[in-house]
Amino acid sequence: MNGGGSCSLGSVLCVITGASRGLGKSLAWELCSRVMPGSTLLLVARTEKALQVLAEELTLKYPGITATWVAADLGTGDGVRRTVQAAHEMNGQDTAQRVIIVNNAGSLGDINKYFVDFTDPQEVDKYFSFNVSSALCLTSSLLKVFQGRPGLQRLVVNVTSLAALQPFKSWTLYCAGKAAREMMFRVLAEEEKDLRVLSYSPGPLDNDMQEEVRTHTKDPDIRQQFLIMKESGKLIDCHVSARKMLDVIQADTYNSGDHVDFYD
Amino acid sequence: MNGGGSCSLGSVLCVITGASRGLGKSLAWELCSRVMPGSTLLLVARTEKALQVLAEELTLKYPGITATWVAADLGTGDGVRRTVQAAHEMNGQDTAQRVIIVNNAGSLGDINKYFVDFTDPQEVDKYFSFNVSSALCLTSSLLKVFQGRPGLQRLVVNVTSLAALQPFKSWTLYCAGKAAREMMFRVLAEEEKDLRVLSYSPGPLDNDMQEEVRTHTKDPDIRQQFLIMKESGKLIDCHVSARKMLDVIQADTYNSGDHVDFYD
Image (cartoon, rainbow over all chains, first blue to last red):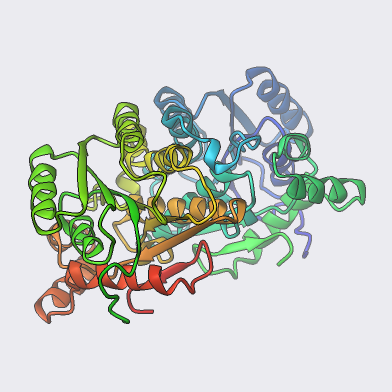
């Protein structure tokens, strides 16, 4: 890791989904420590209170940065629309050097089921709507808000997982959703050569989702594997992984569309 | 290809989705030429008339085989339910040596759009519902109907595409949907060791979908590429690809969950 000093990312406009906790929240903090005054963040998640507190704390510590937020359920068309509306209202659109759209929101789906236990299309539809459709439509809409211009780097981050590349027993929806996302962002990278597209796999994080993994994963081998990681201190702190993501962004040496892992 | 003589697949129960035309229809014909009398097919598609005609023609040529059909839209929960009900009523469940579930139904999505043109979550949701959710829920439900027993091989085929592995410009939904399907079937293969799971990529077929590709693909390079394949006679006849799929099934040497291409 190369650290990355103050202001090293320049003047930034950044949208982070799933920003109320875990990696998204850590990323908001780490980003603020690397951007120039005048930068603006838009924090998106379902829980209004958590976003409000985070925005206040960020603003207190970094008075030069504008932290805005929108409480929205991205599993609904209305949630996507309201997020896009909030992005329209962000300050600094003419002066930003970087736009960063971080598709971090995501859910595990029901991991207490095996493939053969999924017989209700509505449950599966709902999963893909929140985890795939919204990431596609929100990204597209935000790229229309933040039009390209000389001197502006536009970057789309897809928070992915090893599960996008490798099947895990009892994670049917999570694996399929992450695979779908990663592929659609590879298509974006092929189509839009003026964008930078990064699928970042943050590693096994010490967060709420990992607790769900340890307690709810139906397959005993997989559950045990993550229990041992927790007990042996192998889970990664969200701030550490967020810093690594920003290092990758700053180094800017990956090929657009690539899957880059925390351990790479 | 090893050809495969008459009856070489034994006594078979087979469900084929998207059976009214193209690869699904060819597969129905090729399968009938390799199964024992007493075998039963269930043909699924939206178009009732085409299924009825196909079932009649198959029965006329192969009087020992029962060809049943259900007209169902697999993009709806009702369509999945009616297909499962029809599977319950199939003859030969106690005597079949092989159950083959072929998830062949699929659509391209709107290929006259780039990634950035998808801003309506409902359109994307609908695509995933038909192409991913239904394949998952139908397969799971059918595996409950066709329970494992000694002497029975249960095989799940996912008709996939090179687009599951490689991004194609202006095929956002198709690539993402195929990637999702392939991954979820890899999870199934990991979880259910008594099943055989095959993701078969039939190659560029000379079918209606390819015509749509040639005429509607927004990206001019990709469109041109497939136009040239058509004009130079490189597209594959559906019967030829269907025979290859059955050769792969008979040879039975792939690893469960593998992606096997027509050209492999």
